[in-house]
Image (cartoon, rainbow, N blue to C red; front, top):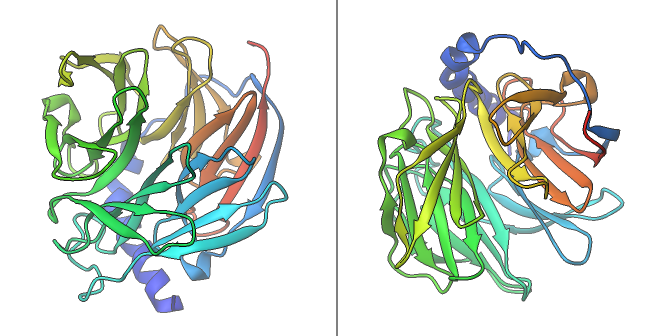
Length: 323
């Protein structure tokens, strides 16, 4: 990717995020546990578009990540080395019609037990936007088309029902599609999913019989019950006041969450009662954090450096006791 392309992408993101960043107040709660042994484990190549957007932790101890602007899926080893697995095809128009951002980007990623990776791709074109499957030693294949006018972002898999849930940050929709692929169905279009000008529904996780979704613009965490017949219940706001919230992960302690806040450049711990505490910030190496994952007590945080334009990276830490 050329230096000019990177500058154009940075400009697009900075302009789009300007109003959100200005609206985010400083955190009232100072940094406090429960993370220890914090370190930057991997540095990525900004000039190659390696802005990490999402992560899934693989059984062999490695991690698979999407590089948004590079349109790539990569594996990061335990030693912090990066190996590109696939590059998604470039749209004929360069992706200039991708809603809000104006460049094609790889977003959400999950894996299944057989080693297959599933990735979301937004291009602003009908021939490429959608859910892609990447099997070992095979070329990526689109298995579900999504609206070109949307921005598929968060991807969650319900292992029990073998259904994917996909958040659309522009259309304010959660789509559902079987793991085998096919025609997506609009699962929820609740107003709580809509944006207020930039990006709405974002991160997604299945937990406790519900789909949990963040809304970046509104700064909320939503719980949407999964009813019988895969019907969506009414959203419940579980946390608010978190403008810039991106993807997140459950800690394994009930409904406790660790969440990335992109524009404020922090990671917060959200308690089941909705209160939050900052646990990581720029002094720890964060550069516009986008997603969080946990393997036991090991915490992984991706930073895309969308607006800092300095050091996209993977941060590692340990989840300790409650402060």
